Image (cartoon, rainbow, N blue to C red; front, side):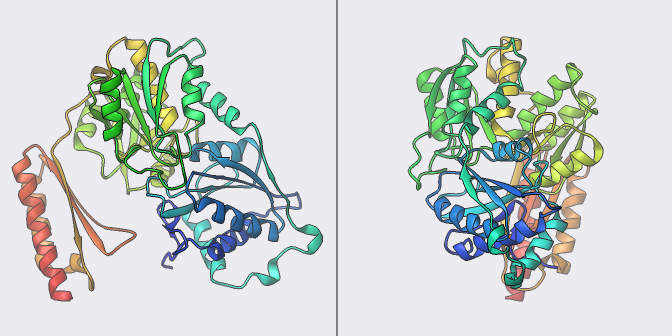
Length: 450
């Protein structure tokens, strides 16, 4: 069955385009019905980021869930990992995060978590998708069995305490000047407060959401403002979260960006030294740099690769028993602490290393030199360009040229008619030639099929 609504991270699209009140209502009804098990009063936790459309979607979801007899607990703007944590700790049957993550305010999305705080499996998403396209009128609750909705106070304190407990009690961030960029998103209240409680000298940016400025020229996908602020304030480190705070990018004291691959290297190596790695391995996606793989191998740590998407990273971690994983984009999953990516908790692990080693972030967070990596996209209208004989030949030639000295990855986008061509290797000129050759072949195939 083709997936009409769910992508790699819930349902996401233009607010009042794909993500309409009608769709949100139906998602509430379908997900509520899918997670009703037993005779107890069922509950769902709903959090959101700071987008203007969050009000509309939140109310529509409340109507959907209550119409099938589910009680709703509203927690307001909270990080995605906090919603996952609260779903489990409050013993809810389901968790919902209203967010389009790192996208701008025009988009929004609906992320769903099961009772243990994990994102839903493909099978459960397919079950919900089937119900979205059918009438649910006969499955609605009777008048006396409708759900209730209430707002929950004190949830910010719960997440702050949870995050602080991921560090040793005796560890303090005193003496560290930290610039935190909350992307005008879901973490704008809790993360600066948590850093202050841990003793850091905190300078906050991206903490004035107005419904329109989430991720706009700020946050993990636009760290330039953070880089400038770190240099201006002569800070020790900068932390950039995205709109729902499930990913993080760091900036060192010189204003240079530290990506997710370097964070995986830092955490993987330090946890191995401390005996905290559940198994001698780290899980990442096919997009992580070959330099990370070689560095970890030198430390006796295997790198397991998955398809793109933090949900696939987590599935592999759970299946194989690993406790560190993530993506180069900054989704870092530490399953000892949480059931999904948590940008702030990942940053805290690095801050702990900085304090422990007493060295600048530029040294602590530079574990390897990334190999030259080039990614290009080829858009097409019709047909299957990857089946074209010229494309097949270009890919074979590229793999032959990179053999032993690099890596080639060609994958169709899961959300648009685009083929992504990525190559990396020791020789940048060779990498560029390989990518350009395959892109040209794909372009010719796409033109012929148009």
